[in-house]
Image (cartoon, rainbow, N blue to C red; front, side):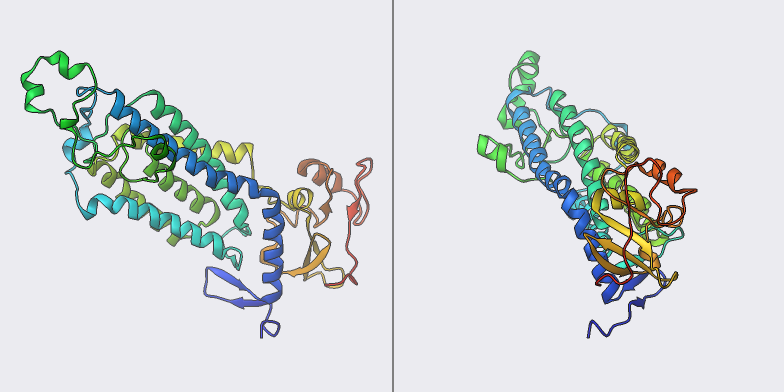
Length: 375
């Protein structure tokens, strides 16, 4: 039945569902990219464990090093205007972040099975989205670890609040200012790791203390917004992310999970890092880039100029127009093998060269595929 399906099934407005032939081509391209980029994804997942270890370590250090005075929360002007939220509302920020991550993850998975219809045609390659996500996240979490490990800040959330005992208030101020905080002032929810095993293997992203600067909640949320704006720029998806952010920021402050400075820092550091990574490590989603780095070659069918094919690892597949790289027309649909000139040089060389002729002096042959090749 799959073989009898039409090549393209039309869905309403926002995407084109791929038929069997085009779906096979899409999965082949995604697999070719994954084979070269999987280390970024594996390293990004592994780095979440590293980040968790450091959040546990800073919680351990706060319990061992800070005095009662140092454990008192800092003054934040926003706290004077926002009521304290508790109960289910305290967890609502986590639910918002999970929903944003799930939405982006859903779009990433679906991108392998459909061609999205944007104002500007651009095929979305799921592996490039994941690579962009983890590249940015690793950089941000590294900066975050350096920030909270060198400057220990007292938490203001319910599980971190320190309440001086009557004995501390009645005693000399020096006892409250110096020495380790009296455990009697800890809240019932105070539960720092106490062993090396807990530091290394405890997974608790919600109720830690000390990992404040800068806000991890806002990092994840802002990164989701950047990915949607960059790869899935529909009005509905952008509106959903904007609404989530509008609720997330005040609720993060109202739940006292972060100070205003933590949230504001994340709001400008995350886009800056994202854009720098995008400029320095751009997606290789051009016609020349896909050919040079992933052995994926797009071209027009030699018998029918209205049909297109791609070659992945020597195998020929039929593709729809919506699956073509965004620069396909300007690059004349010629693939470049490994060791070829970069994209700018390649396009310059091809500008005045007759089709099928290798660029003069380039030392690189242009691969063409016979129309009789086995499909």
